[in-house]
Structures are given as structure tokens and as C-alpha cells.
Image 1 (cartoon, one colour):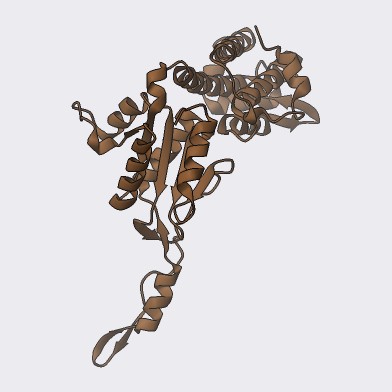
Image 2 (image 1 turned 180 degrees about the vertical axis):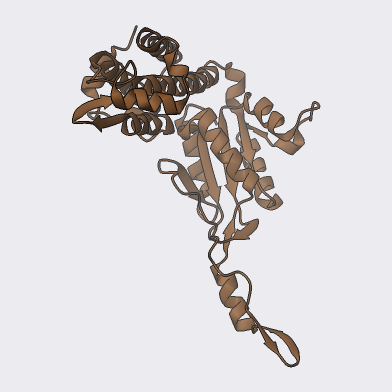
Length: 317
């Protein structure tokens, strides 16, 4: 194996894992590492629990509490496996990635202090870890597919857009000017596919994605008042005045279409953060928990910034 897991554990915290770019060869080696960790989890589970881990949860909990195969004083082998697996996933996907957070959450859920012993349910920990590793392997295989694409696909850029046709057309023409090939979903053949199937089909042929966040919808948090109060009088029902209505409208925020947000997340997962750029309209509510992504205002010099970012990932334009 190219990557020594014990070295990754020792080095964890002294690097910016998610800033690293891997070659196709390194990605394949990392994929093999993940598969080995997954297979080890399966072996550890079988060695310790056999068929017992499939028992109903209520019976499993009793076994955990009063002793038995699923719980005991610190299982050093499982603990070592867990630390190595967490370091590997961190190294591959980055500290802030969902998979890393899921592994850390597992430790908190299953590392329980029972009667003063540092114990945890190895059965559930290994089973849940196995499922997360399956997701990690699938995600990494998509990354390998992206980095292994023929050079002719490097010039294809997917444009995710809402209802603002003017902005979409402007970005499309700009990309064409630099000999890039814009991919806009509704302009592609349906091929008898559903919308999500079309997205999956055509996204496999692109290297880069541009997300257009334009204010096509308005919305607010659930508890934000959105209807003016009404008053019962002898003459009937009266609605609050325009001043109240305007105050309500002030609480509503411009938002991108829901399909745009969905495809936004899809392309970040598929292509990686460095291959996705967000062009946003001023005043539009931006998604939360998206640190590390590049947002460029459409009211700025977005053309030059966009070209620089596309060049930075190795696309000639």
C-alpha cells in the first residue's frame, strides 16, 4: 500500500488534508486502503460476534449492559482499527467532510462508560462503520472516474441555473468565447430519461460546474409571520394595512430554486469543491455550511475571476 495508516494516525492534525489534490494513481491506492479497512471491519465483526450482532436491538442492549460478546473492557484491536480508519477517511476527504463527521459521531454514540469501564458496543460500531466505508468507496470511485476522463472532456462545463434566462445566456456565451463547451440540461437530448437521470448522464462528461444562484423564489423561516393579521368587525373581516404587509415582505428573502440547490450539492460531491464555482445575485440567501466553496457576485468582475478559477484547476481557456 502507498499510504501507511499508522503514519496517517500519527500525522493527523498536523496537515490540511482537504487541501491536497491526489493523482489518479494515489486515488486508486486510497480506494484499495478503504476496501481493506472495510474487509477488516467485516472480519473483526465475524470474529467477535458471529451471528449474534443480528439479534434485535433490545436483546443486544441487555448483552451490552451485563456483559457478553458485544461489550467489554477496551477492545484494543477494534480501537486501533477505528483510529486508522478515521485517519484514512480524513486524509482522503478532508477534516470537515460528512464522512469524517459520521465516524466521529459513531465514536460518541458507541464509546460509553459502563460501570466505570471504558467500553463500547463493537458490534454496532463495526456494522455502522462498514456502511460508512461503503459510501466512502463509492464516492472515491466517482473521483477516480473524474480524474481519469479523456482530455476532450476537460472543456465541458455544466451550468446549473434557475429561471433567470438572461444570466444563464450571458454565462453560456462567455464560456463559448473561451472555447469551453457549456452543458445546459434542457438543451440536451432526453434519451427517455427522467430529470435526475439526465443530470447523472450528462454530469459524467464534465470537468467543471458553475452554479447560478439567482433570486427566483422568496421564503423565510417557519416561524416568520407571512400572513397579515385580520380583524373581525361589524362590517366583516378587515385585513391589516399595507404598512404591515410591507413589514412581512421585508422578512422574506430571495432564494434560488430548490432544484438549483439540489444540483449544487450534487456537483460538489461529484466533482469536488475546487471544481465548482457559485455565481450569485446580490441579495440572494446563500446556503449554510458551505465553507471552502468560492462564491463570486454577479455584480462584480465575475468574468475575470471565473476564468482564473477555471485555469487554476488545469483547464486551458
